[in-house]
Picture: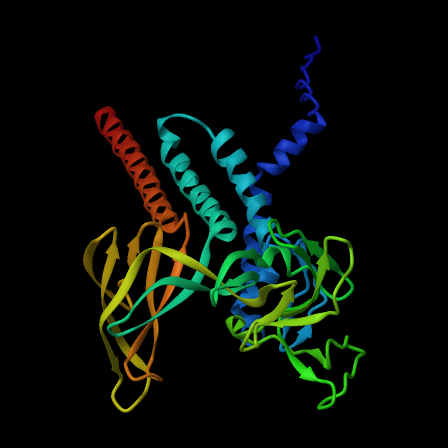
Length: 403
């Protein structure tokens, strides 16, 4: 009598949606994304030496960078890589699908779930910081006060009417509306309550006005009242760049004035008359007000013996708010966190009659999230260890009882 063995039942065919879900939540994709992040970080570390930190971060990790070609010693590497922002976004999706939604549930796997949630929080913190953080600096001299910070990188155009020798009705055009107006592109900005609008074009990240009779334009640059904008190589320290652009007044009847230059390197704003009214147009770094006033009571600087390398900067300040005062000490490793702002002791200035402290001011809604995420990951790993250890002890006890 023949033995007839039953063949195993065929596996059900996965739908395209199921295959896509398997791929997006798979461990193989997570491994590839982590390797890509490591490679991007390595190339960015090498490249920032020549191109500066800010420019390199924008090239490798800005949300607008879908892909890039790395450079080593100024030479392009023929290896297209995806932008780090989108690699991180894919990793976030992978961890959410595979490490939270599809992970095995139960108390034995609770530690893994907690650790994955901690890593997700860290990735989300990076995205929030990328989109919403602001960086600036504040200089305060001993005995003086200041209640504004100057943005590190963003240049704005400010239009103000001068009344009684003071600016009023200030209109601000933010940098996000300017930095894409490169050569050949222009935009008219409507200015409510003013008798004209403003057309801006030819925005340059780092440039300076040059007189035509001193240095003739080499590339056919536009002439504006005997001057043109000389495009300069970006500074390694991006905060030292001085942006510039061309502008012209657009009257409400459609007529336009002759073009004029706006430059961050200019010492005075451009002044224009419209009838009997006087206006100024200026390009300058964005100034953002603080919710309190900072008074510098005392600044102390210590240096390593025989060098000018700083070993310690300490600023004793008074924080003035709503008629109240609070004494605070800010040092190199002890920033002040208050009202969603973080004040770091960045540098100092001794060019004036009194010493001045330079604070780096950061507004980051996710400032403490990476720290919290590390606590969550550590707790998850502890839960995993205790779960495994408890299971091992229980198994050993059952074995001994059996023997």
